Image: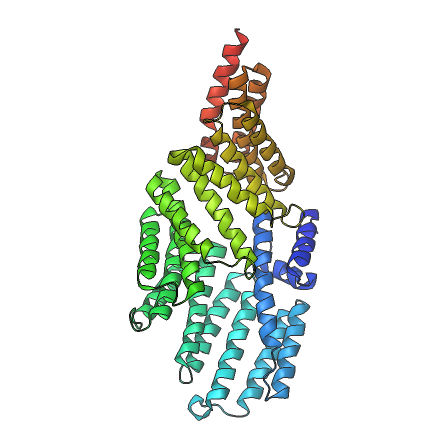
Length: 462
């Protein structure tokens, strides 16, 4: 097995508290991708699946209190999942379903308790399928969530709605994880159909939760297609949800919508150089942070600080100047309290890279060389983990960013050798990105290369 993959498996297993066998099975379900592995994406996916596994295992091990045989089969399924045996886990859950039915076939002949247990069992089979990171398994999961919603419908409309949400989420993940437009479009149609049956005044909380999921699917499709009109549509969906949903009605949901609202505003604000949109995004992140208890959900608190820092950098480079850039650095430093280098090396490196970008921006306001020297040190730190042989795209981005910081310092100090080093590094980053088929990303560094060449030529004459 690839050495980097081995390291990722060990790191995620230790950090997330899940068995390596489970992670190996998730990795195997991905199949063999062509080309060089995307190690950053692999670690992200394994981390997400670890969280899904923990939630599913907790549900499976919760005693029913009434049916020892059902409990035994669900515990057997949990054990199989722990060992990475997904097919065996599904078989145990299927047997648990039969045990629960106890010979009954017609739903209208079943008690409410039996119906809800049957629906939960079918949904858990859907969650089991979602652990297998491939499109076919996700389709199977969406179907099982749909069946769970149908089974639960006569017993509890609220529980049926939860399974219907899971169905739509599974469809959206097909779009997100496999860059499949049809997953997003199916999810969007599904959530629109759900919304048509909900009243935003009488059923505000479930309506807002469905609206949030619709906005998330629209946003995913927008990112896949590079469609700014769809991003605007997602923003308005989030805005409408927040207009009708009060924070006290559902504090966690309200904070989650504010967070997603802020992310979408930041994405479009960066794309369109719209400072007012970035300011609105920052306000949304700050609102979400104010409603987030770090002691209860530390991972979400840290993620919000990262997104807030990202938005502040975007704003500082466009409008608000030093104050926004300093706020960004403070936000990123809070993130580094939780994202330690040993435990989350690529996340830690991304924060270092963004700190470097903020410091580069600050160098326009503070002319002391130390600001750029600190920026270069931050990019150096990022490159400790963003190694060329492991994540060439991220290496090229940080390498190019460091070169631009060196170029600015060379311009300040009138240092020819530093300018020559910056030019060589920029050329290397550009060629690497072009070789990866990332021409648009490479183009970002071309003005710097022209500046570096002109500076070198000028300094050679002096």
